[in-house]
Image 1 (spheres, protein in one colour):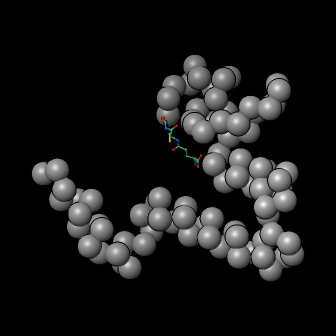
Image 2: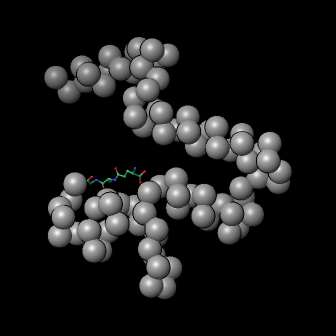
Length: 83
Ligand SMILES: N[C@@H](CCC(=O)N[C@@H](CS)C(=O)NCC(=O)O)C(=O)O
């Protein structure tokens, strides 16, 4: 957490933050979904939207290290590089 004193400025105390006028949206995926819908990039039908969500969720898993069983060399590199 950046600090509780930042909560009035940064919802959830984190970046990224999208500001539109006096409105604020935090959380990467919420921002991405908002912009995708606004600019017609959220899929032309339910199936395409689901496939887009699938990729977004897979990216979140990658960021959270959920694919360690698929990519052991990368896990090894992350744990050992710079030692
Ligand atoms: N779930 C959030 C995570 C955002 C995040 O980790 N932001 C980092 C910077 S990239 C941050 O603000 N870290 C400061 C902190 O958590 O104290 C999102 O997807 O937007």
